[in-house]
Length: 107
Image 1 (cartoon, helix red, strand yellow):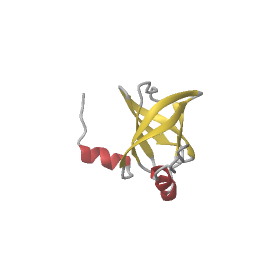
Image 2 (cartoon, helix red, strand yellow):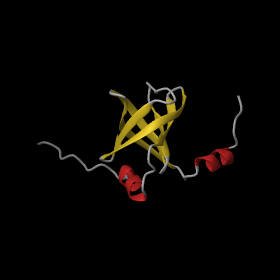
Image 3 (cartoon, one colour):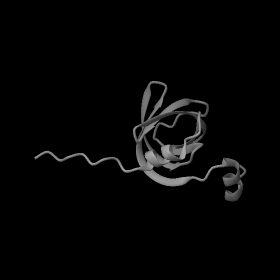
Image 4 (cartoon, one colour):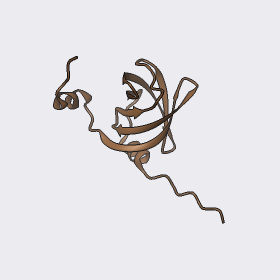
């Protein structure tokens, strides 16, 4: 197995990745998957899920009130990379990373 130098991988991505750890909703077809977003860029993301879909699978990602379509480009165990069908705008990246509003506690 060939291991790429991390600088080479970054150059191929074309977009800087922001490290995160966010629970998200992701659907492979109509199947909902429990998942966490591990990093995010305008062009794609790294996702962790016990039921990682195979490369080529179309997915819908829901986070921060936004829904985006993507395709799984690689999968290694419980981690997989997705490429968005359309790149995210800077405001969309910020919205996805913004903290969710707090839920009021019931008395």
